[in-house]
Length: 153
Image (cartoon, rainbow, N blue to C red; front, side, top):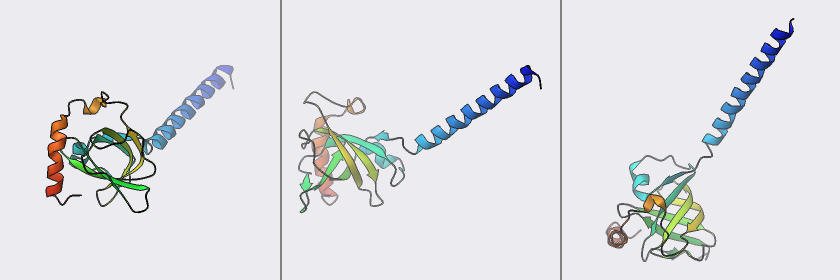
C-alpha cells in the first residue's frame, strides 16, 4: 500500500473517531442539561417529570413553612402570573426570605411540586435575575391572595 493511501486511511479513521466521540458527548450531556423556567413557563409547558431544571422567581409572602423534622422547607415561588409549590430539604441560604428572588435547582414530581436539591438566594435588595427583570413586586403580593383562593398551598 502506498504512503498516500495510508495517510488517507489514517485521516478518515481519525475523523470517524472524532465524530463518534462528539456524538457520544452530546448524547451524555443532553440528559444533564439544566434548563431555567419561571413559574408561568413551567405551568404552560409540559415539563417532563424528574427532569433536572432550574426554577426562578420570587418567594411568596407568608408561604415559607418548616416541617416538623426541622430540615424540610415548603414554600411558593411566583412570577406574578403563576405560582409553583416548592419543597426543599436542607439548610436554606442566609438571604432566603419571603419576598426575595430565588433560583431552585431540582425536579418537578408527579404531584406538580418542585423538589429542590439546591437553593440560590439573591445577593442584595437590588439583584434581580435577568429573566425576571420585568416582574412587578406588587403583582407578586397580589398573587399571594390568589394562592389562598386555590386552597392555600
